[in-house]
Structure formats: C-alpha cells, structure tokens
Image (cartoon, rainbow, N blue to C red; front, side):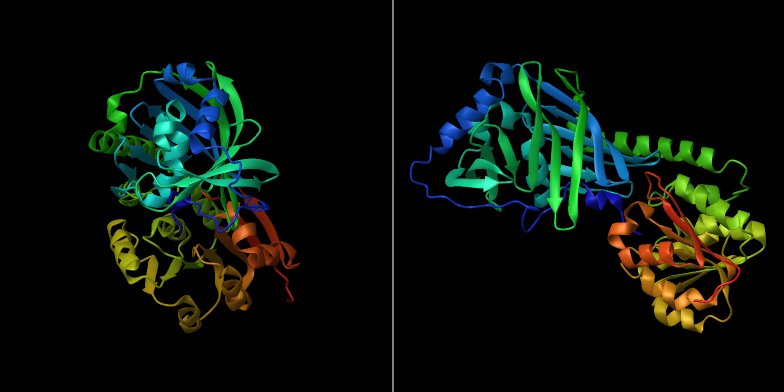
Length: 436
C-alpha cells in the first residue's frame, strides 16, 4: 500500500494545467531588483516584514477531492521552518529545515529532505523570502514577461543552491509572487500589516493538491527544539507513539487481540480506523475464506486475521515483494495468527490460479492500477454474497477508474464507499444471484 507521506509537497509538473506561457522580449523589462522591490512594497513594506519574527500557519492540505489532512507550518527568521501533516488520528509526518539542511520524519526513520521537496517548500515557508527577497533571490535573473493562468507576470530564474534552476513569477499588476517552481501562490490576505498567501496549489499532471490556511499568527513563541533534527525527531516519535496507542485502544475495543496488539502498536502504514472497519466487515458478513492482494508488512492482514479467527476462517495474502512478506510473516507469528494467515510471495495473477475453490472475501490494496484486472480474474470464483473491498477509496475514482466503474455499474454488485482520512474503503457485495 502506498505511503501518504510520499505525496506531501512533491509535485513537479511538466506544465501547469491550463496555463499558457508566452515569452516576451527582454527589451524594456525591468531589472530583477526592481521586481523584488515592488514585491516588498506589495506585501506591506520592509519595515512591516521585519517585524514578523515567527509565523504559525494552520489549515488543511487537500490531496484528493475527498481526502483532507490537517497541516501546521511554523517558521522563524534565519530560514527555519517546521511542518506537521496529520493524516489521521494515528498517522502523521513532519519536515524540518534548520536554515541550512532539511530532514523528513516518518514513523520508521528520519532521512534528509530531497532537493525537489526543498525547492518546493522553502520559498513559500521561509520568512526570509518575505523580509529580504533581494537576498533570498540573489542571483536570479530577469527572463522576460509571460502570461500564466490569465495573468501577466515577470519571470525571474535562478538557483539558490547551485542546483536545478527555479522560475519565480511575479504579477505585473500587483507585484505579488504568483508562482515559484511548481507552487501557485494565491489568496493574499493582510495579517499584522503584511500580505500573506492563504492558499498554495501544488500542481502535477494528474491534478493538484491544495494547502489552505485558515489561521495565520505572527510572533508566536516557537521552541528552538522544533527546528533541531534530533530533538524534533525524538518529540515526533513520542507523539506518534502516543497517538498510535490511543487510536488502537479505541479501535480494539471489544476485540480479543491478544499478542496482535503489541504488533499493531509498532505499525504505522494502515490506520486503526480503517483496520477496525475491515475487521467489522469480515465478522458481520461471516466470511470464512478470504483473499488479500497487497500484503506489504501485514498491517491490514492482522486486522482481517483477527476477524477470520473469530469466524473460524482463514486468509490467503499475496505480495510479490519478498522483503515485505518476510517481515509480514514474522509479524503474523508474533501476533499468534500464523495458522490463520497464509502469506505467499508471488505474482498474484499466477498464484491465484493455483488456489482451489471459491472465496467469500476479497481485499485489494496493491498500490498499482490493477484492481480491475484482479477483479476480473477472481470474479467467477466469488461465492454468492461475497464481499469485495478496496482500500484508498478516497482516490480510487481517479487512480483506478476502470475498477471504480465496474464496482458501481455492475448490476450484480451492491456498492458503498466509506471515506476516511486514512484512505477509506470501497465495499461491494456480490448479490446472491448473478449472471455476468
């Protein structure tokens, strides 16, 4: 299954959707310094900008039409900033930039922030870009006048780190920053005498993600530890641990999890909310013979395994990644579910043909656009009343259009969708009588 952190602020488009960029001769173009001076005046002036020592922005990050996460961005002078993206009650990711280097925190590890992420995030999070744009964009050269999204803009181009060149577009009429790299900057509102963008649009070929700020505060005390790699990593993992334990306690209520609880406590790629939904679906439908494609490290299979154990049934789970299934098998053993969950390392299309009999439950979570092909492969072997479930329902219509259409238009399927911040589930029940 896919990791939502991979999607955070990493959208490098070949071209802006619907934007027309027409280069104009450099003749009569103002110098880059003039554009940056106009930007300073447009945002409220240097004196107002220099009064802003810290900034805290809170709002939402919309990754897909039905997937909205909570976002918090803290920034301080000297180029420091810290972002917190909360996907669900037990899943969050963070980024830290100390003014010189950046890191990303995930539940499994802390690793250096890649150049593409930094190029996207830094110009719109860094207070120095607001207070002293002439220093921040030093070395950027005038490239001409263009039209972007119906607005005339001046284009400056350059690199702050000596790496990939970045384009900064400034509105000819207002003087405000219109776009930096792949980020469209808009919805400027005055806060403490300074115009602050309240919406950032990150654009890619498959669509755009929108960060909308609902609250902006300036000169709020921010602990220095938030911008320190080691201290922020320690605090982050403690917060994730506490959130995981709290979420599991809530979702495991009424389930005799046994040793599976300890295993679930250290897993973070499948929310407890979605896990409990899966458990309830299996139990309430009395499923006895299940098939999962997309094991990963076994998080979702643990929830289903507990349910099949309750019903007296078994689950076969398949994944072609040997490293992940090795971890999954060990997790199943430690959870006391090895006799319930049959984990196989194989190509699902080949392996399913080797399994005899029918299924009354199918769970798809592959992270690849193959769900329709898998459904076609298994469909005839799904018993009357069988339940078909796919994870990441929030993005299925966009990422798996053929599967989405089949699930909703097949007259022999009764389909419903539950949207959650952790991904959501599409549930289709095969009618007792079918004639496909």
